[in-house]
Image 1 (tube, helix red, strand yellow):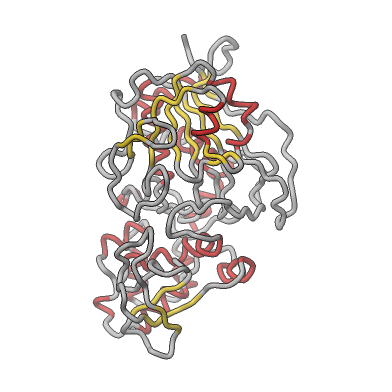
Image 2 (cartoon, one colour):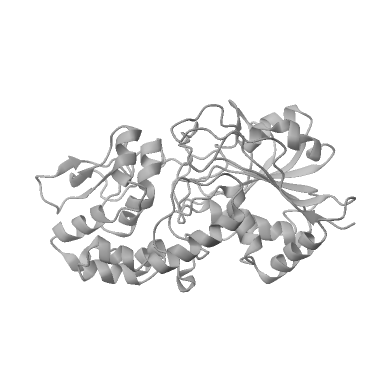
Length: 408
């Protein structure tokens, strides 16, 4: 039996003012739309602690509704979301559900044919934060490929993007492709996980076998008697002006919306000798280093849950405090990937040749090897931003082809 590809809207979307969050409903909560597609099927679920239906985890909710979950896949930070960044999480049985959990991080990033044995349908439900180097979109790409390669339908439960109200940053040069950046998109791409998935398929950014399958399913979409192969369950009452406050922290070091807003700009400090706020209650809002001027803001990172061994642990650091209300932080980022803090830190750091931990790690975050040289050459932020403009403009045009929600 042939399959075909489509997405579903299934309802009229009410567009709300930019400041409103009234009744934004993630795809996972629209159970009347997609649960009938899971009935009688053996389900593989890719999820983490953000995969909630109101106050109950999606896995528990589906099981209570009589859905058979054959296997759970977990991303970076694990299925329950408590692991450190980069920490290895093995295979285990989830105590709450009794279902086997397989980590798709580290050396095992894509489900194998053996992993998917006896699986009838695959479901993806993970909250993204809209930054290229946040690895859940890389996990999504591998999961899509596994679905297409093995001929198993994929259901994506879409969620709002908390940074989905702007597009900015250097577009990745594919010479610098890594798990922290796999496709030629800017640091902030302004798309939901469902929209991004449609772009992966539509632009043929998957591997050859998956691209061929994706194209085949598209040609079959006019056949009325074939089941779906790729389906996005849209959010209700969301658009790209929405300022969505996540009800659950998406990872241990993004505890509040202020950190999420600043993350695209301050994640660069991960590849420098500065502490980026890990080991404090304000990750990505604090950053500093002992060698910076003592007149600056001071803080001391300690071992915390989700950051057991932070950079410069137990050392007094001097630097910046960007914390404030969500409205304060929104004003500070000003709909841009801000470079001013990185440039100022480099300017004030006394040992310029030791500022970057390694060029390779910084270039993976930047998506190119130009930014590091621009910083070393003391280029202004305006000069640096001009070097992004052509590629960024092209991406903005490309992005519009795949939007499921009204744009900003």
